[in-house]
Length: 305
Image (cartoon, rainbow, N blue to C red; front, top):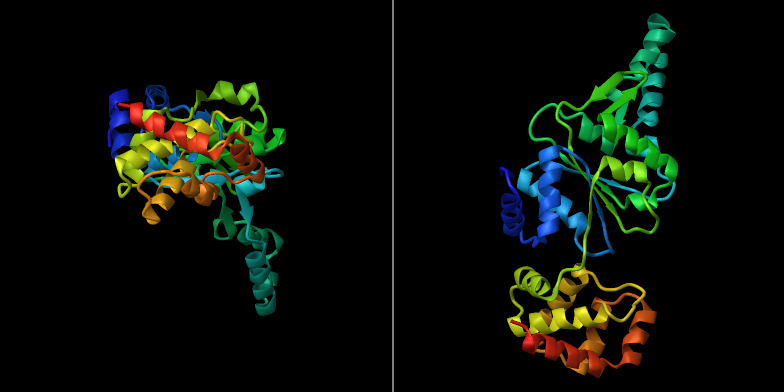
C-alpha cells in the first residue's frame, strides 16, 4: 500500500483497526518518507509495539523483532556462528582424512562461511536482496545498556555490518526501523538525534471507545463506554501500573465472555484482575471505592457523545 500522505497513513492504519492520533500518523509518514528510524516512547500498553506489527502488514513486508534486555550484546543482535555444526564438520573432515588434504587455511575458510552463519535480527534486516524492505522493531531499547546503544547507533547510521571472515553486508534498501521505549531510563541524545521521535499517549475517551468497539465487536456500545470511562478513571489514581489499551481490550473481552451488559460493583470486583496486575493497585482502587469507580464509569458513558 502506498503511503504518500499523512491521510494515507491514517487510512491504512484505520483499515488495520489501529486508531492513531494525528501526531502519530504524521510521525509514521515522515519516518517512511524520510527513511528515518522512528523512536516511540510512552507508558507500557499504549500500542508502540503493535504499531510496528501493523506497519509490516500494511507494507506486506516481514517484521523482524529485536527484543532488548539487560546484558544484550552485539553478537546476540547481529550475528553468531553455529559452533556445534562447525565442530561436527571439523570432526567429519578429520575422520575422513580430508583435513590433511585441505590444510589449515582452507579448513578455516569452510568453518567460517555462510553455511555456519547464524543471522540475528540486525543482519536479517540489513541483508535483504529482494522484495519490500522489512520493518525492524527494536523493542524496549531502554532495557539495553549504554554500550549496546552506542553500537546500535553505528548500525543505524550506515545500515551496514562487517563480518571479518565474510566482508561487509550493506542494505540495498534500508529497513523501516521502529524503536520503542517505556522510559525506564533515558535513551541517549545521540540515538534520539538519529531518529524521529514521538511520545505515544494513552488514547482519549472517544478513541478508546472506538478501539474497544472494533477489537471486541460483541460488546455493546454502552458497555464499551463504561469500560473506557472506568479505565480513564483508573489512570488518574496514581497507580503503580496504569492500565494500557491492551488491558482495556482484555477487560472488555472478559466482560463480553461473561455476558455482562453493564458494570456494577460485583462485576468490577470479580474482573479487576484483567485490567490491574499489581496487588497494590487493587488495594488503591478498593480504598478509593469500587462504587465510586462504577459511578464515574456510568457518568462518563452517559454524558459522552
